[in-house]
Image 1 (cartoon, rainbow over the protein chains, first blue to last red):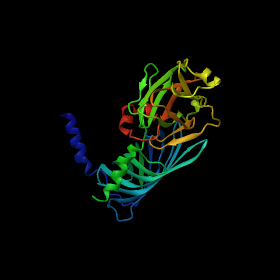
Image 2: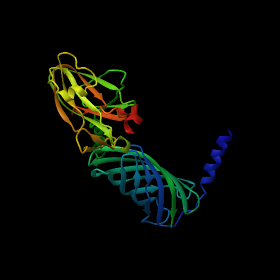
Image 3: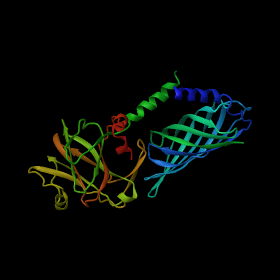
Image 4: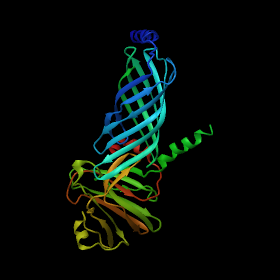
Length: 160
Length: 186
């Protein structure tokens, strides 16, 4: 009962937690683990809102540097992200786009794969500018060897 | 809806473009359930003295490329497991191959042996599990009608994981891979 009350308080409070940011840019630095082809690292991203404040649509550009026991993984992504309920504490995120993946080992030329990605998650507004976000990404490579990859990422972001 | 069909096709076709994975244990003979479909048979040398055995039975003469893979990890650089196809109707191995086998060759048996000595070691990228492996290089073997055995051992008694690729007709594997995901994926 106490837990339910706490959840209810958070939900009610979330409606007035953050102001709608008027900024057009957002930079996020999430840590990521890829669970197919194990790698760990960062995948910084820049988001741009082309329309007026409060609209959900953002363009996303991301470049990752991740390393693992077998490879260095360098993904480059370009896509769209819908960022909902930006005035609330909990802000759902959904996105999709295209991705070019580079994988490198010492004794083989760079392996390149091209395809698309999907992502979903939530951002938590700490302040009007600062956010913590948690996402789960899924990619489907079509060229350079078919395959599906997925993994979680989490980090902080700043709107300006 | 019409536009979603290509995506659905790709999503469901991708698992079909894989070898069927299975895990080998040195203390039990593994019987390949569908030898006409390609397999990726994974195991691990814990002591370096293990002898893995896989039984395959073909209703007719059957050609299959076979290669042995080792994860491309620095501590496995010297790990070079060997394989052999053993059975009646196969050619007699040469003296070096015969001496390298992990067990005496039964009377009437021949063997095709690959001691995994190619240097420099070729590297492949396996796009489904997104892993890099050193490979012995695929060697095509014509298996006779009837029962044969695949033997896998570590001539240098090195320890570590390996995968044996067998066949070309891919028959799906994502669901099977999920059963022992941590072993196949990492």
